[in-house]
Image (cartoon, rainbow, N blue to C red; front, side, top):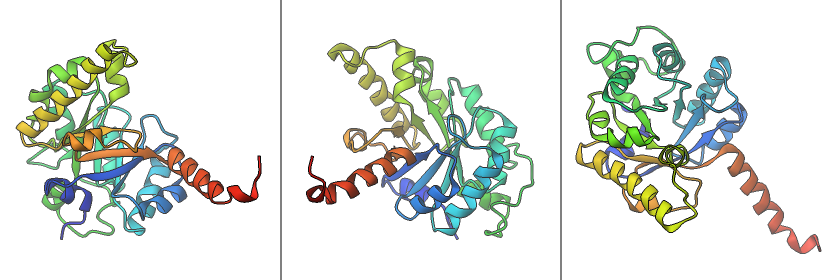
Length: 252
């Protein structure tokens, strides 16, 4: 039985909306899991370690959610250790070549589709399945966030075992050295993003992007793997909405 409902949605052509979690709180992850299609534990920039991420994966699954993780680098241990603890998918940052994408797929997939070491009880403790079923459940994405990654997007996304991508607009703008406050810079940046989306669609892979939300631009362009906020922004917006409801009792 398929349990990665976020991956199923995307494979069916529907967008999966999630949030990036950087605060390092498994309790926050559990609370948010009830409202989003997936949660992306950010082990690259966020306040997570292996133990706290493991706790978050368990709590998210227990709440009926789908836990994914962005690992800190393209490394078999970084990838395998998180998958062993129950993540249903990974995002690997700064992938710029097909060889790097092959390394991602090898680290994430059990043989013969990859070279992932067999072990770990995180996922198997609540889903008694074999290696082939684990391979099918996982959503494996590369992050395309540099000019070189954009240039090599077709060869990167054509790699067997890579399900899709997650475009990083901010790092891409830095790599391209464009000023998005100008019409020219914004146009060049958006054209690069659209080229990756169109490439993913052409080779049959899932395009995705990080967007702070609410922003429908890239959903309308065809992105299916979309983060629309973070734990901090969602908590902040919730607090603001709560206080706004009581504005009549708080004269300025």
